[in-house]
Amino acid sequence: MKTLPSVKDLSVEQKTVLLRTNYDIPLKEGKVADGTRIDESLSTINYLLEQKAKIILLSHLGRSEGKISPSLSLKPAAQYLSQLLKKEIPLFAKTEEVDKNQSIAMLENLRFWPGEEANDLNFTQSLASLGDFFVNDAFACSHRQHASIVGLPKLLPSAFGFDFLKEVEVLSEIKENPRRPVILILGGVKEDKLEVIEKLLNWADKILIGGKLPQLVSKSYPEKVMMAQLNPQGKDITLESINKFKEIISLSGTIIWAGPMGVFEEIENEEGTKQIAQSILVSQAFKVVGGGDTEAALTKFNLESKVDYISSGGGAMFEFLAKGTLPGIEAIEQK
Image (cartoon, rainbow, N blue to C red):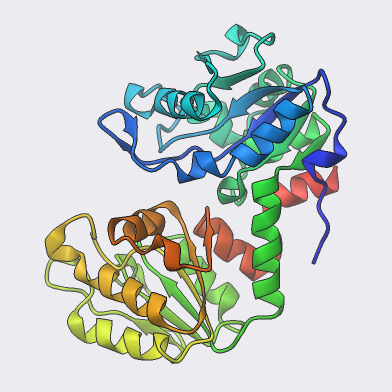
């Protein structure tokens, strides 16, 4: 397993650290519905505060596509974290307004700026001017070529946070020494997961495809790839597909699951996700789940405590298993 630079390698006392977190969290009525991703950042935040560093938190939330969207403000995340740390965390809407004298502060949703997703140098420089060091603790975002992921390491001394390092440790072990057979279960609606099939075809023993993805497939795959049939509404997989998937799951040694089997938020379309989740969790396999929607499904069905490891990213998890690296890792390693 590769050894990556840790936040512990940086001399951060009395310095300002730009900490890239993954606060892309579910909201309900303006409040945090599931704060797992914020909780996971606490070990790095507390370490930096103990080292007498100042912290400016960077994150995105949802897909605002370069426009300011009040419903995607990070204000609920700042309030949630304030309660955990028992200290006020001011939220700044502009880079030039950030108060560098705060022990910890947060910049508003990075995707409110077009320069974030465009990896624009001017925007990256405006971020870099706020701090002395950059720490990436956002594994789930590190397959993206965005300013706060691949741009900042070019301008500041950089390292990784504890949650990121844990992700790499666990997934490297699975990649290099999996218990076989290895079963990948892909669902949800994000088409980029289909690219993973090609990359992991030789490594996985079976790949099961559900969610909206079977509707998006335009090519044929080898026999080890099994596509679910969908119900007439296209919102869940059929009972026949559920039973076929469950049979394969019961014989597995390692299961890696990202993406629900249907629109599980609706009771009439939850059965596929619920039954597949239950069959995964009663199997004897080593169980890894990744991605926010999959986490939310486990939470809904009260099953999250029965998983061996929950990765914060679905797409990033699969890309790391396929390549053993991510753009966000390479950006810091190359520096």
